[in-house]
Length: 292
Image (cartoon, rainbow, N blue to C red; front, side, top):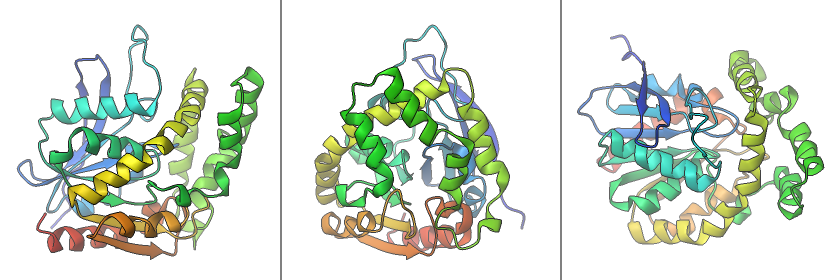
């Protein structure tokens, strides 16, 4: 049997933000919401979606500032993680998604966990692929960003961080570092990401989000309280060679979630790019175990 077709869709929210998303699977099936990270988009899930869509309705939106989601120039949108999360809250409401498992990766983690705080009754499970909610999960990668947080946010401060984080080489590095076999990574992945980063004004979008990422650390205690009190099942599938979000961040989920299951994979940051089949099967087994 051929895999379900992945459909490309758009929906305009009441805020006038036009959200691009990929969808596949039976319309009446349980929903899995896939939230991407920096510097990517829903494109990173192109190979995972068909694995899950045989049984689930899979929905993967592009966050504001990424991929093909667009914001009218007339809309004074401030790029913060609070606003990314508010957009996704509006998105799930617009699609009338009352129950879903959420897959969180990188930037998708603070976005998805903010969503869970806003809609705790809607979340049936959390799957974290290098999606961090603990200070001990921050690798050395974050040192220049922490310096940026402590800076005055001058043009020189922004230019310095942008040169380090937004280049083609830095984008490719995020995909390849820690990967067993870099030849398994499709070059169109990081090439597309970099091309979209080059759009006019996007560098400032990304720097604003780097600046605001500190707000997520202040919410870590609330995220952790949610995990303790919600009893939501948690699956952490983690590229153990990731220098950005390191394995202690995966193991920490077990501290707050009695239903946490942790798998450390021989992979880097973009584990879903190279370990797609294994991650997909771990998810299917986990959902079956918990009746999702």
